[in-house]
Length: 184
Ligand code: IMP
Ligand code: MG
Image (spheres, helix red, strand yellow):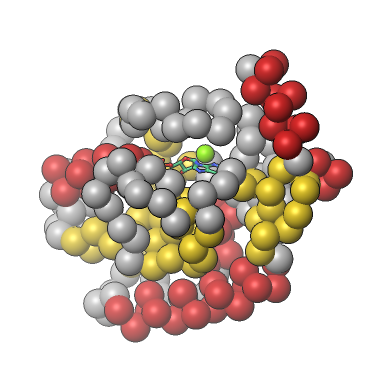
């Protein structure tokens, strides 16, 4: 797996330090009481697990399965809600976590749905935000790292379902991506 990585973009120690700061900011900003956190599966799993353990507050965790990428390195443009039931968010202050803000379509669609379901407020946190124009008008309240517009894996992010358990964020070798796209 590690042999497929061209270079490490953000190493584990740097991520951990940044998560300390993000957790502190979230604790300061959110009203006292139980935090309702919605984790977008599967990409935000690793980020959320490490972030939430740094927050000394009662937390209710909900997960949402949405699909916006269907395989390779390009966004499909549509966002599908895959769960049979949507979490109960009426009147709640919600913190929505995703792995990365790319085109913005995923966060935009989920935020709209949370408002439609009656959430009192929706705040968003992402580990990564790509420095590019968004297809959907959205920004995140908490951003771990701004990165260039390139495809990355690790720390929850996948390529064709792989590399989520790498403890850092890295860039794949071109040959690996080429082989995957050809076979997809
Ligand atoms: P968006 O809807 O285009 O903002 O993209 C959201 C989803 O696309 C993320 O939750 C990721 O699952 C996936 N994605 C976007 N960029 C990358 C990347 O560089 N590596 C892996 N997955 C990505
Ligand atoms: Mg994904």
